Image: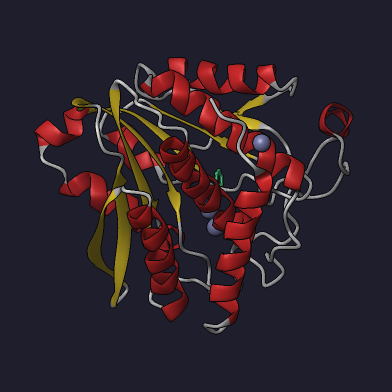
Length: 282
Ligand code: PHE
Ligand code: ZN
Ligand code: ZN
Ligand code: ZN
């Protein structure tokens, strides 16, 4: 797998910040900054040769959008999906939540093309709308699939908050998730081990967009650097950072800007996503 350039991921984050700043300070569902984010990511993927599609839905009286991007080639009966939500809350630009996962997935998609990766499996990305209103976009997508299309998706990897300033290194626990999730958990753990980073398992339950996939029986996994939870002293010893402080003090606030990003955590997670994708889809 390629080593993902954190500078490239950060440049995508700067783009999200600019989009928010030009559109009233956020990228929220139903606001112009959200559609501008969709259009910008789509243009980058189109230029790289992905087949993209914008799926519309309605939530809270406003039109929402999911962006779906298929990488050409691979066995379409054997699909690996990766995704994260592209919307922010209305309070701020949502650079860690979830510009971080969105920008990392974009850079990994671009690197698939740049490196000429030819996986055996078919790879599809999803950037979800209206996560902050209750996982609306990802749920709409899964429900919109015919049973046959749903059964072709063999894995879903979710990335929501991967650059928290006071970062933890969490991998979604496979416990209670569909069978097949353990292999995804272990692959993500192996990615961190290859970087010499210790991890903890976390039960993200229904708190992000993997939930709809899990409900459909699709194996799920993901990584997370922490939100409003407080870092313990044992965690600070293991990972550095500040004990007794939130992983992300700007969670859902106006200060979730490009200053609210731990570049080391962002880089490590992007490298681990690439590691897991290359191993899962090969
Ligand atoms: N989904 C939450 C949000 O967007 C953040 C979160 C991600 C929480 C992963 C737990 C696990 O606000
Ligand atoms: Zn890297
Ligand atoms: Zn959020
Ligand atoms: Zn989120």
